[in-house]
Image (cartoon, rainbow, N blue to C red; front, side, top):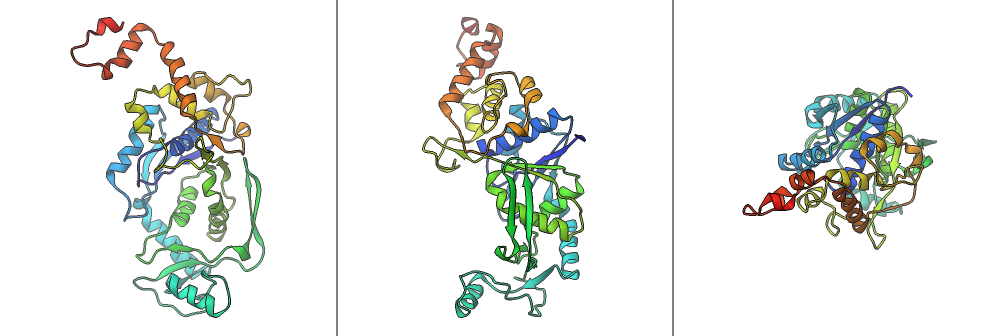
Length: 335
């Protein structure tokens, strides 16, 4: 395999959670195993939601885990002029068009036409001038289908008549992440897109944009299995204990956290789960990532963390425990 280029591309709209950390780790493991490049890209196209504090809330846990990046952090907002140029070109080429209809307008027109609620290409043949509040929609081909050959999920084929003309530029003029992803992945030479299963439905749309922009072959996709809690429900930032910063503050070792995260969907061929990061890098393969949902088991994390703690020398244990000991405590008693 030619040295791959992968990217972790979080949005700075919240703290780094277990799902995001697993995605970052699998990209990093893949890059390190194959001698490739790991790019960190901050997808801050949504101006209304991004904050500098959340950027730090992503970078600091990555550093704590030992996930280093070869390029970045690169900020998508600094490339906006390139995204806008791509949108303009799609409009000129007839692959995208302006639309001034609100969701309510679209639903009303659908009801009048006896169609399900939603947008049904109402503005395709209308002469809409660009201006405030006007979005740009991609003109999805009428016929045929788009196929995504996913390393983990297999062949995914989506008929074009099931894909509406999706928005690629918001009414405030800002590019939507689908468009920005296509442009940035191309310009940065990304060869493999490794991300969560929840984004699988966007892959055909990005591939359509990739082809419309004349980019040639799109990256190889690998969509990681869903993470679930003990009730087998999708892991939730609101409901579940998933913030990396919280685990760090409670004294979990970064090596143990990396080991546990690596087992969320991947398993070593020899079945030995607790092992150094260097060995995980050596063994890691997307071929060993399963399709089924992965259970984030805090009790298993506790067990793994305990194994790592018991493996520490007295001096290492003292240094590790120091931040949690009161100032008056005799450190020599710990050793």
